[in-house]
Length: 322
Image 1: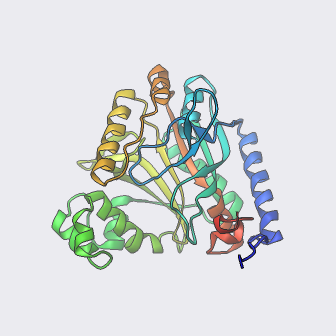
Image 2: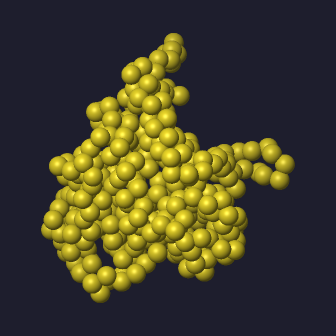
């Protein structure tokens, strides 16, 4: 006999109420600062080329669209609005990432994304702190460079460590054959996840910034202490990554080159190459204003507010009960 599905929610009424209060707080925060709330498509023509993200394909019978991709982030559409003159904007959005389910992940989750014209990464970090610390009533974050965090937490300097030493440090988590196919950044990500992240923000919230240029994604790059670094930051509280922000790249040629490099990495990893979003690149070419942007996980923020370590406790219906 087929087992009846469990129809009950996993989140308590108190968690549902806290989510509603959080949404109200976020909207009030941006209303006070004159930032416009927008909505963009959840189903788009293109997914993302990012090697570490997998989009979910959705069939469609709509005229002129054989299928589309559930968006991993509203970023590309929001930047098209920025290029069209929308000014500083924010969005509370449902986003989707394939294959992600665990105590901190659900394939469908809530994301707060916002862009501030005239801001750089340092200015946006301050605003992220205003929002997060205002909602959680916690101390303002410290700022630590990626390099220093890796030295302190993993005992390696990520900018000068040899490939051999880096792989030796990762042997405790992967078999030799798995390590063979792992890139330098893949090894660094492994070290960050297992050796560094668990202790980040356990005493006070902490921003990690100045990531290696190879991990810039859509961020600008500059030189610091003789190394190319990305104007990118992440916020950690109690070992939980809350957000990822950039001083945004505005050069369409450089952005196209990065997308093409992403697809080369995907192909090398045996993953399908993804169509490059030409509408997005056209918008950047038209003129993306000087701005900084950040994506913040609202479910994780609510986990911190309610004191849980399991994302299911703040979701009405996670994947297995959807």
